[in-house]
Length: 92
Image: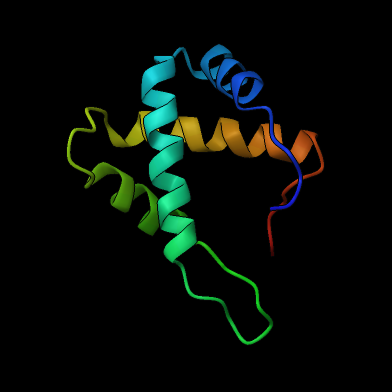
């Protein structure tokens, strides 16, 4: 993702949509980035992320105190933000 993302704006957006604690949001986004950085590229150089695997990975991180619905809400709000900015989208 070469576009610059304003993390403060992103966290505020997610907190506004989910009412989640900004520190939790930052934790979830950090674990998400680690998961994506370790994902394998396909033959086209693209990385496809399974959202269930991602949520399971995040929930399995030590020190993360949250539940599946909150993590999913944070990730959904992040995706809404990224799609609004034209940075990301879903593949059918």
